[in-house]
Length: 551
Image (cartoon, rainbow, N blue to C red; front, side, top):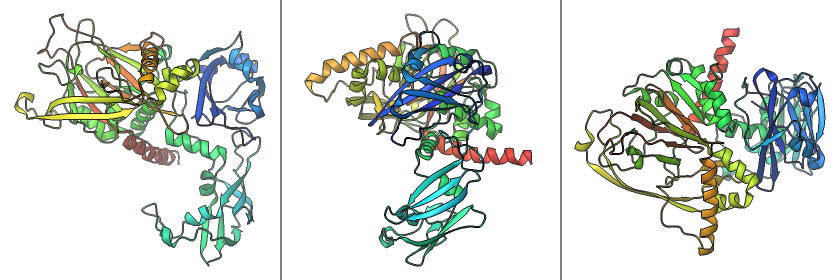
């Protein structure tokens, strides 16, 4: 995983990621410029030889900007090789750099970096005026990002320390839950003294009310209030996102190595390490292909249950995408499907879409269209900021009205015509581009059929919104970003429904094939909350398994 680093000037809120590509021939620098609640992002690609004149550089390169953001520094992890460049020249060099609003493919080796393992406390001091404790922490010889030393000063508020006491009276270790009652909590309580253990791996606070709290150095360092610790926490929370365009997709689709976007169904079902690899790749790239499943009913559900749970919607738990006589959705026709995200009319929209190909149309058409909408949105943020602002702030009405046969799926063998039909009418209001409070894109809503005719905005906003949305749609469908892939029977296309827009080419004759089963795709949804929970638990179990093999 790339390391997010900050300069020593704590007022600097900018940071950058570095991704190394195959054979260390080139790398991408993904740069984030923070201003208030906005994050401006761009990426550039260059070669190591051009930047460092042939000097070697390791995977975890450190990048940070000096004060006032005038220059960019690139250093190796050990702090050996370094080079400084003016920021503007780095981005706009005529010879080496081509500015792009996307990032590289996933790094060749994605390793989770735990910089706080083996922390030791050099000293600790009570700062009574600030109501903090200052702890000087050393990290057992591992350099901290953005510095040439392994020593870091960390401050912890008294109230936070008392609130997070780990003793049996205040914390239930098996339930991982705080048990202290908030109404009994004295937020003004202060420690009378402190003591660092002889091995310097823990610290004990003696409170004025007679209570004692002991904290391990690793535990404190991981939860420090420093920019470094906060940045690492956000990476663990949000995941390692890598944006892509058509050129990147072509490369990963042609890649036959272990770093390909293809994952074996049998390996996923039998090996936790393969399951983790698939889910991490899906989280990073937003799209992954599972190959080798049996094109029959049942396997898609088993795959979903292996990762988390099937998310039920008003279309059921599993749904069949094929041409029908009385379709409740345009997907159930043989017509072309525009690029869209599924179910934008759900407040809690399913996070992952899985489409298993059972039968594929043998003639031309029926291919899947895919776009990384986050990459397109970041392009608009830079090159069309006014339109981006309109799409990220204007609420749009999304709706779906219809009837769907009762039943969780069609695995039961009961024909749809014999089931009762349940009516539905779903509505949700949200912008096309949804950000969190820090300006980080978390969701994109696109669906021409499900965009309601109700548009609850001021009259003056209508025309400007349509102009902005038209630009976004043109970019989504442009060859620069839109790619196609025709599924083969047994393949399962999995993608981030909050991020990746998908569509389908028309197929069949002009008269239609309403009764034909010559293209049959089974679909299911999962939620990111459950998947990310699974990823975290798998990382622990797979890590322990690897350690046991080594020992």
